[in-house]
Image (tube, rainbow, N blue to C red; front, side, top):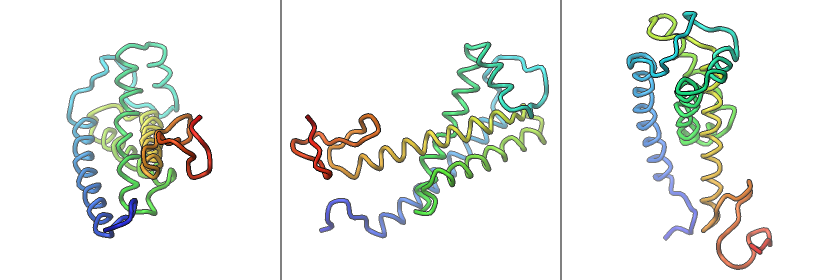
Length: 175
């Protein structure tokens, strides 16, 4: 029997394979949504492409409504899975810098395909939002990972506190 919290090398290998499979399915869905499916914003954009940082974000911020929800929040949500999946590719991938790199590279690829296929509007703001979304996903990964280390732990105010009676590993109590 393994001690609590111990990880078998086979478990690690299976987790990587699962992350790669889920990542491939995610990438296929992402490419469909960004290149094939019709746009969901309903907001007319006066230019074909945007290379000015924060221009589109500012437009949607001023307009609000469904355009803001779909474009700004949608781009953040669309890349959160990158931050959740990339750390499972192996220990050296479990960093904010690596997640940001993968999110930027993936988003850059999508924007380049949109530019060259003229399927959608290529927008530098999408890359910014996508990287931020990947980092939000990575933050969620770190919170969950830290919470799993301490039995019965809940993330509270950036610190992990246990639900059981008595002091935690650092001698702190829940009172």
